[in-house]
Length: 314
Length: 314
Image (cartoon, rainbow over all chains, first blue to last red; front, side, top):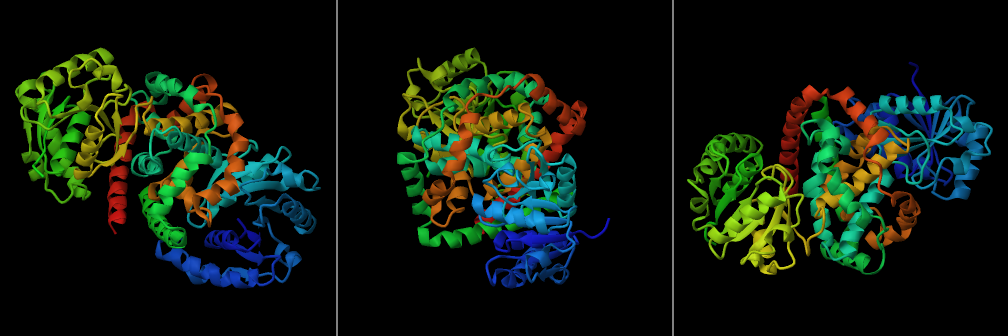
């Protein structure tokens, strides 16, 4: 397979993390950003990220030098798009901006290139409908940063060629991501729908005075999540009954359907529930210390991903 | 603080795992089981479990010998309950059995002992209402096995003395568990309500043809769960906006409330969704290989807990 050539359009944090992923997978990467100076600053960010990833053995055996050497700063958008087979767009999450940028991408990119957006909030149909090349447009939504977290949702618009979904998914596998091949677009895609369902219940438990915010965090962090990091939710229930998932549903389905009526109504995400959660969080991490807490999360998560990737290779 | 003396009533797998937890916390433990031979077999199981926990540095610095030396097999229920301050009950999840056993526990245990059930499926009010000592009855529900997974839900019946919840929670902390102090009983307690909400959406995504079962597992296992194993769901959203959780809700609350109407109806847990999930799981793990897959999950989870406990101490 020829070395894929990639354009990163929007070279902030997400764009730089994508560049590390693509370059560790052997791709050549051109960086572009409409805001002056952003793309020029990207190589330094990419090198720093690549050093961290290398220290955690997350560069697929590549060196930071090799990763850095595959990345160049484009002189303009047309230059970035020259000869590429895949465009990864990471511009701000405003519909008008996406629509304007995507019209340009479709006009300037090689006709056989896949155009992929990192959007989490917009459906692909919202900014690709009127494009001549709308069949080659797709969402490839990562959990940030993609260089660290494997899952990427590949989401087609109604007019996306299924072969474009498959080609994008295979490119993701090549660069060390784990693609989720969605069959159609839907609000929140897959991961934010699962997170949303869980958060609704989390807010509800606090709003109804059943548990404190810290206890919800304990229940996931010290209870359910370690298992889910080893086996997903369907694998979990499949391995929790002697006869597999069908047996599990026969044994425990009644418990879940008993609680379902009290889980129908969306929880109140404002008012006293939010007050309690905010108070608990600020008692634990004052607002000024959020950057420090983020850095600690990131360094723990990097070490955890190194551990988990080593385990799944074993 | 005096060394707590514990009775384990029901000495199968869950009872033995509890024995390891209590003994690593310095407690003396008496094992009882109504089925002949079960309690007699417990010491060997407990020693084997303790060896595994020691190898993963999960015995809080204790040796398997020290753990084993703190466990004895009781001659009968009255003997098991003699002088104990906490009873941990793990009998089958049938209401009639629980009611009969709890009448005995309340009659025979010292008046100041806490009576705790490991039940996941029954509310504490269902088997404690008529007891003279119902104020000292509580649920302490672990994720199995408790020797490995820290979270334990402490759930009061309406008549449980709040001091009994607090005493149980403190005992759990002493033996290396992470207690969740629930304010009242509710179907599914806290963890199964969160798991249930997520599973409803997982079944829905498959039932509506949005994603394949494997893709749901990828989204959690390779996407959301590693982060949740480091920071819980409220911590996660708090650290995902510069102004904390209040800022997160202002930015992204709209996305979640947009998807909420399509998440109201309980999913179909039978029919074609279950067929697809079952087919995907059996293609990955044939029914006969479930024990092997469970063993692999357990050994990966043990190593992961060792890693995470080491991280959170650092």
